[in-house]
Image (cartoon, rainbow, N blue to C red):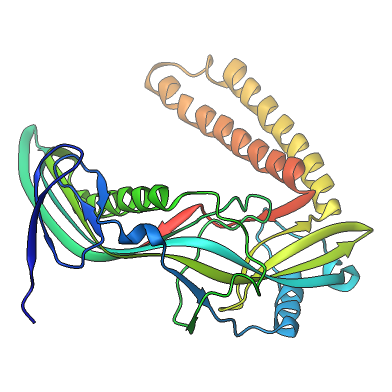
Length: 326
């Protein structure tokens, strides 16, 4: 099919642009601003169908009760004592943009070998398609910031029949944030491995932009008469975010053991500094400073780990990052 090209000027800087007929999003490479032919402002919206049932979501949360890391361990009896009190399905709005990104980066890497400076000049030209999304509402309380768009069934939007969070960002804001994020991503890909950059230019050509209504199960539960929740991706079944009680015994033990070890290490460091180093002269004295620094560093690390576990171990909070794409 023959492509029809349209010549126009950027409404912001006046730079000459050439677009294909049907393009609704126009990105100016001169002033890095986004314009529109008008149709995108009608806001295309799509809704994901969900495959995870209510029972599946509850089962996944019960598995999540037993999961945790070394520093973020949930209460030991959570699986046994937690009581599910309610579940509900919600749809969160996300802005999604698919766009072609291209970045040209020139620069050099400098390395000194045997007192000789070697300069390696580099040029990178990266061009690829990126898929970006970011939540379009204030979902701070439930901790969901972005999703990994899976393969799934797309349905017509039925706002009146499903519980949907209200969009708090305008379509124009979403388009501008998407273009900026994709430009940053392609620039990061092109500049990787180049230490000193002398020239860089990034371009974005949007292919599509839409609002995605994505389903999540909110599973509420109680533990020792306190309320908590977990958010389950209703398409993939993954736990996207949630709050859970920490292991109280582990929290107290971490505080006590951490304080004791930090005190012992600090005492050993003081003794080493006052008694050992002054009695060691010459080169050996200078070399003896290294173990002293290592002792202090070990004490600092132990103290930080113990404090983090003691301070934040009472409640485990899991969230997703605010934005993502690739």
